[in-house]
Image (cartoon, rainbow, N blue to C red; front, side):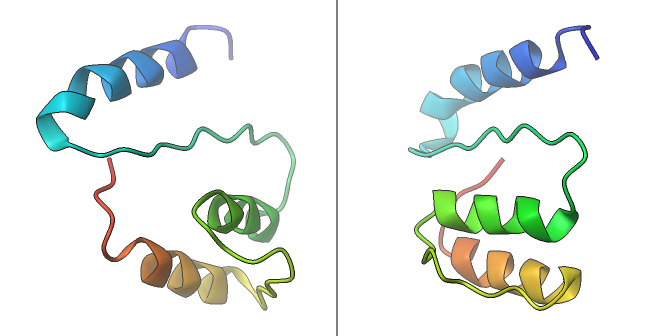
Length: 74
């Protein structure tokens, strides 16, 4: 931590935005949370429902893939 990874990622995101034409981004702070919790935060950020149930990490990955299938992502 503390070497500027997030700052660099945000700068790259801004630099590439005009070239790739995406209009949404998501930076999540992840410390000691379980992956399913992080997956739920990501889904909520991209229009998921508050009461979404993620059974396990594989199920969460499938839901994210389905949610992002028509969205340009970096």
